[in-house]
Image (cartoon, rainbow, N blue to C red; front, top):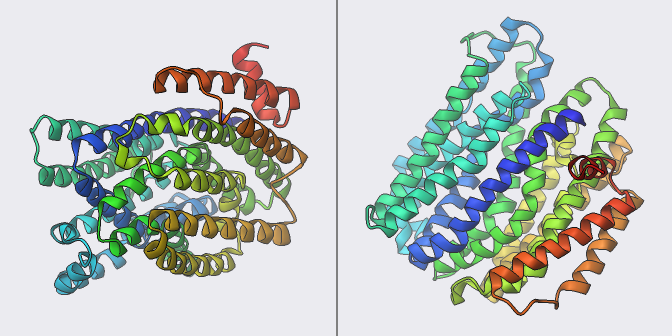
Length: 485
């Protein structure tokens, strides 16, 4: 776990820095510098692009991680990487042509409830391509065990760029329309910088020669399109469908704020995932199941402890946080609570996703994912018209919980390993007790002061309890290291 903890710590710092900047953008700048309907439009465009991204990437970013370590000669590696560079074009070019031919019908469908969308359809296409090739170049560096710079670009770069653009709108240097064009430019620039860094680590030598296992690679990449689509659908279908089904696109903005608050819980998983993915693939390719099980359990405990602390900070400070936001954005308390619980469950699975997507059983997992994506769409279609954004949050909660439970059962049956232990139960009980104890306890100060003091108190109590319970050796060692115990 040494390299995991080392790079995961750096990735966690950069990811939280990115989320901090994102929090300023999402909670304060967007809500004050853009009108609610244009904020909703931006959220809708990004969600639509995220849903398209796995198709544009053609599963290449997953295939690089899974198959790179199987090639040993320089020639075979060059042939593999050349294939990975050009494979996405098999989807991007035909989709672009179809989009050009069927443009009017596509615009009518996307802007049916909100006419504001009709002038920005091509923006979605360009964003999706930029996001796809960014992930491909990031995977290019992951297999070289270099994840820190890529994580900075993934979590910080575009958020800083958007912050600058939002201030430019506030200062009237940019119109809102120019802001959206510039936002697309930020994502394109991020992709190009990532490309230069990836090529600086390993410059591609174009070799167009058929690989021995090319059929297996193509099948895996195609199936990963489905896997990636399922993951993105679960993450973004709610915002996309809110924009399609509700006549007020600003509802997407209100929902996005609540979802962003809850999504902070996912930061530790995102940071650790960058280095766990290639390690998991390595253990599976080498059939080192003892190391794989150790990584599974320890990553689960570490993520549960860290994400549990974030869960406490969110739930116990949410009322004070909403006092800082414009009144129209403060109706998402139920959304924050229920999505936070889903994210906590998601984190507790450790490297479960990495095991499934890099194993020989990924086909069955994809089937589960497709069924779940269909269920998420159906549930959103049922609940959104009746309950609005709260209905969408509940649909997302059900989808995520069922999907995660299926994945746990599947790994247990095929690999005979579980991520949970008695230590997991201790952590859950600790979270329940602290949540009940401190939810109604506030200081009589300004919201920011109240949040700061309460967070410090909760953090100290939580650290002491986790250390005394010794639920995670890795966490305990980090506490000893930094507190010099």
